[in-house]
Image 1 (tube, rainbow, N blue to C red):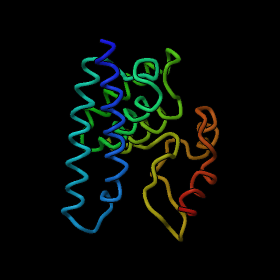
Image 2: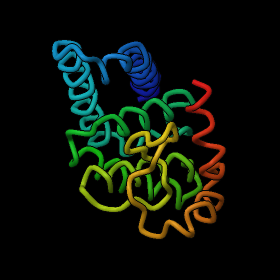
Image 3: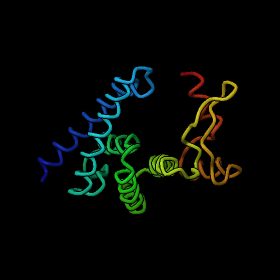
Image 4: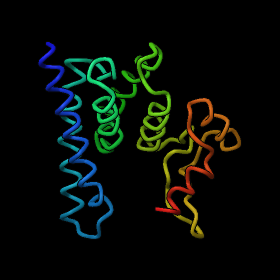
Length: 168
């Protein structure tokens, strides 16, 4: 099992590295590049589904910090595999409740899943587009409480968060 977990940690880190290298394709004008991104994220989502089936949520205790973060990233990008995102969300909620998960990462995944379900997000982490040069979040359940809710899970205020995009 120890060897399996070490191999799993390497596999998750490798998947995250491939994701980072390919992320530029997600918003490409070239349909072939968009398709390559979708194919990669679908393969990763399928594999994450198998991993969750076998191990549960890959926590930091199980696979280490880098691989645990990689699992979260893969779940974030499984946008066309809602069953994978929902299962990851459920397992991550349990991990966070047990003190072995990141409330911040859980908040991002919760928002991402809600938006993918066509529902309002909670924390304002998902950006719908840009209006007058400023990033605009997808609709939120309680926009007036967004920064308060963000603070509860360790996410900076929305204005600070979007300032990062302006610099990018």
